[in-house]
Amino acid sequence: MVTGQRGQARDATRPGEVTGESEPGGVTPTGRRPGTVGGVVVVTDRRQATRPLVDVVAALITAGARTVLLREKDLPRAQRLRLAIVLRELLRPVGGVLIAAGQDTLDGEALHLRAGAAAPLGRPRLLGRSCHDEVELGRLSTEDYVTLSPVWPSRSKPGYGPPLESAGLRRLAARAGRPVLALGGVETPEQAAACRDAGVAGVAVMGSVMRAADPAAAYARLRAAWDGVCDGSSRDSGRVLA
Image (cartoon, rainbow, N blue to C red):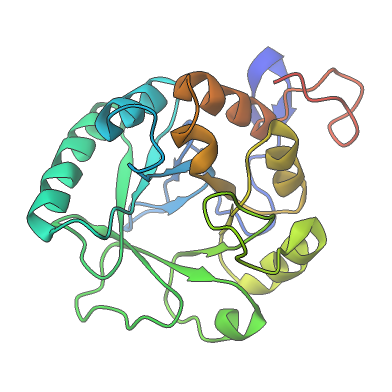
C-alpha cells in the first residue's frame, strides 16, 4: 500500500498500472527499463504558458511533478534539444523523466509516438503512443504505455473528439494491456479523480497547468485529487477537498 496525504492509504496498483512504488507525480520502476508513467504527468505547451516554459515546469517539479512530456514540435531541432537539456537538468535531482513527443528522443531515452507513427529503429528505453479507439489499441506492439484521448472536450484542442468520458475511458483502458494515461480536458480535481476511478495509471495535463496563474497550486490540487484526498466519507463518493 502507498500512503497518501492525511495518512489515507491507497492501493499501490490499479488495473493497467505496473507494480512497484511510484515516485510523486510520475515514474514507477520496473527493472531494466526506466519504468512507465503514472500519476499526474505534465504535457508542455509554451503557447499556453503564463510564464516562460522553463519557469512553469520548474514550478510544477517543485509541486511534485516527476514526468514531463515535451511537445513544442514546431520548434527547430536545435532549439528543442536545448529545451530538452534544460528540462532534464531540472528533473534529474528529483529522479524525474523527460519524454520527447515525436520521433526524435532529443538525445534522451524516452519517446512518445503519435497514433500511426512508425517506431524508430533504435527502440528507446521508454516508449509510449497516443491512442483514441480500439482499432489503434489493436495495433500496439512493444509500447510501455499509451495515452487515451480525448477524455473530455479540450480547450487546448477544441472540436477534437468525440470525448470518451469516464465510461469510454474505462472500457478502452481495460483493453490496452499496458498502463494508460487519460488525456484531454482533464482540468479539475473531480475529473482527475474520475479518471483514477476508471482504472487508469495516470492523467496527462496540459492546459490546466500551463494556463494557470499559479501552476504549482493547480498541479497540487490535481495531484491531491489523484491521490484520493477526500472529506473522509469514502474514496468513491467523498467530496474532493483539493
